[in-house]
Image (cartoon, rainbow, N blue to C red; front, top):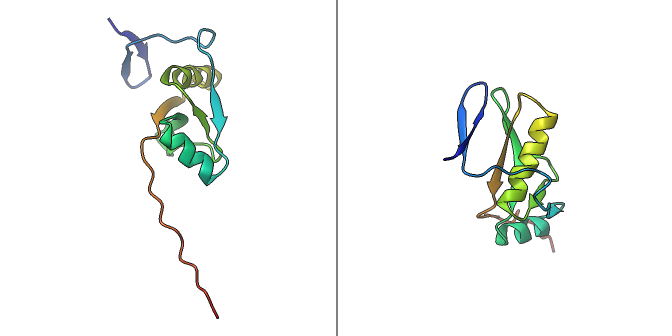
Length: 106
């Protein structure tokens, strides 16, 4: 039976309970486009927050977690530090990039 957590507006059911102490935190910071490409290819996870006023929000230099368990533990840690705020983790599954056009004058 899934464990249920109470949010002020919704019931959430998670299939596993993860504690920070039992989860090894493997992560890398995403500082550049090459970091983003590498983490997307590896299918890593990033953590963000959600508010009714601002929608989804992710850090400019997001931290990529290598496992869903580590990302869930990070959500739990952040939620404990910020009561009343929702934290989510998403898996990087795809990326599209169109190079900016560059003019060349000769």
